[in-house]
Length: 200
Length: 200
Image (cartoon, rainbow over all chains, first blue to last red; front, side, top):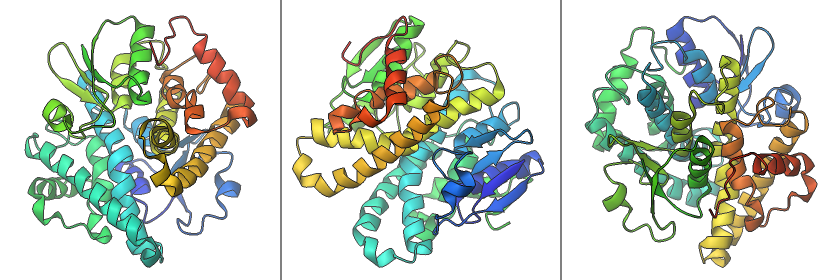
């Protein structure tokens, strides 16, 4: 398999983290997340949205969207529950991550730490920071009443999806000091056998 | 089942459309999408993100996020492909809808047609309109080369997810005149036996 990747993208890290847990070999081709001028040329026929991650299977079929790639790779493994309701709960948190959590936390992190243009986006940083804390508060309330992981008592795709940008939220100026359930959960995910870091 | 619903929300319409196709009975409780002051009281214990749709199963278990609700209801039906790769492709387009399509098209529609505050959001409307056309262009390119539906030759959850806000994009000022593949596909989805309108 070939993964069109960015080393700093949390969405790409999710895929690399799952591939590591599953012990699946793959090649990486890194794309720039700031200069996107070659995206149409490289990804035009593979991903209508021209984003990374994009995974190309050994038979050449392309798959886009981190959540869909996680599902494709994870089905049948210990990271997708066998129970129908729990499976839907995993997707609930994966959609929450893409709709509410990532568009705030990942965007602030990108603007502050990677764009080189943080000053010209002060108002956006401020409003997205507020949105990001709202998402973190929702996750904190959930984890405080949960059984150790986002869904049930074992790690699932939901943990992988939410770990990716939560564990680097500090790069966007988010302080997790007031979120003890999130902090404990981050430690549990990072302690799983087979874990790899975002820089690996 | 009890569906916490909004009559104008495309995300809620997705669930109602699938429930109609599946012939499943349910109750509706409508919430306001402009005045959200009662959300914590009504949804606090059901949905950490306090959004509609939220579905409560007959045994009391709550499920949030339109994509997860669609998956829960649709698994095992003709709307979720039996093939693993096609299943992932359905999720690819559902995540595309929530990450790229809906945050542009649904937001412009809401601001222009429902918020009562269109004038004070002119810059946001302009940038989100640009994003919305980019999403529609990506969908158009895909459908122009597709086999009649978003994934394969039959309707799936991907069509239901993308139909919801695409068919009312005109309320947000989007002109689909330059998108013939989308226009033809909207007609096919609406002509499916069992179809219900957003106003039903």
